[in-house]
Amino acid sequence: MYSVFVTRRIPDDGLELLRKHSRVHVNPCDRSLTKEEIIEGVRDKDGLLCLLNDTIDREVIESAPKLRVIANYAVGYNNIDVKTASEKGVMVTNTPDVLTDTTAEMAWALLFAVARRVVESDRYTRDGRFTGWDPMLMLGVDVTGKTLGVIGAGRIGTAFALKSRGFNMKVLYTDQHVNAVLEKELHAEKAELQDLLEDADFVSIHVPLLDDTYHLIGENELRRMKKNAILINTSRGAVVDEKALIKALKEKWITGAGLDVYEHEPHVPDELKKLDNVVLTPHIASATFETRRKMAVIAAENLIAGLNGTRPPNCVNPEVYTKKVK
Image (cartoon, rainbow, N blue to C red; front, side, top):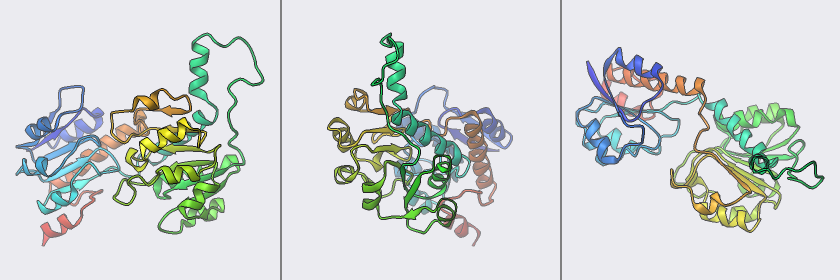
C-alpha cells in the first residue's frame, strides 16, 4: 500500500477513503505544522494532503524523493511550488467547484454585515448599551438598487454576482474574458478596474493570488472608490495592500470593509482589530459541514487517483501526467 501524510485532520469522509487505499499518517496536533515538521512527515511518503496555509516549497518537495502527488485541500494553490513539483514529476491537485456557492454566500454575509453594521450592533447590544429605539442609532447603507462591482468573474465571482438578482443591482465586473452568463442574466457590464472602483457601491474581490494580482488593490485604487463604498475580500489577503486598507478605513476614504483573508495569515494587524468599520472573520468562506466534507472526499480522490497512476480529476499541472505516460 502507498503511504500518505496528512498535515492536519480533515473530515472523516476523506480520511476513511484514504485508509481504504493507503497507510495514512495524520498530524496528531490540533495546529498547523512547522515547515520542519512537514518535511519530517512527508520524507518517506508517496502522497501528501496539505492545507492552504502549509507552505510546500522546493525544500519540502525535494525532501521527499518518493513523493508522487500533492493534494491541496483548497481551490487556490499558491502555497505550493508547482514549478518545482512539475520538475520532479509530482502531480498537484486542488478542490475546485465544490466551494463555489459557499464562498459566494460568505461574501454576501460579509457585505450585509458591514452594510448594516451587524457585528458592531451585536457588540453594542451585548454590552448593555441598548436603551431603546433611536432614529440615529447604527445607521448603515442600503443594498437594494445599488451598484455591485465584482473583481474577477470566474466560478466564485459569477456565483456571487448571480446572487444579486434579488436586490435589483447594477452589476459591473472585471475579467480577462467577457462573461456571457452575467451579461445575459444580469445585463452586467464588463469594465476596466479603475472605472469599476469609481462607480461601485460594493466591491467584492474574487481573483486568485498571482504575480499580477498581488496588491491589486492599493492606495491608488482605494482612493478611487466612493466614500460610501464597501470592500469585500474572500479571495486571498495579499490581493489587497493591507497597510493601505487600514489607512483608508481610518481616514474614511471608504465606509467599510469585510475581510475573510489577510496578507500575512494567521496574523491580523492590531490596527485592523481596533476599527469598527471592518468585519473580520478567520478564513471561513468554505466552512460549512457540507462543503468541508466534499472537499475532503475530492482531495482524497485526487490523491488516490494519482497514486494509482491515473490522471487526478483536478490536476493543476497535467503536463506531469502527460510526461509520465509517454
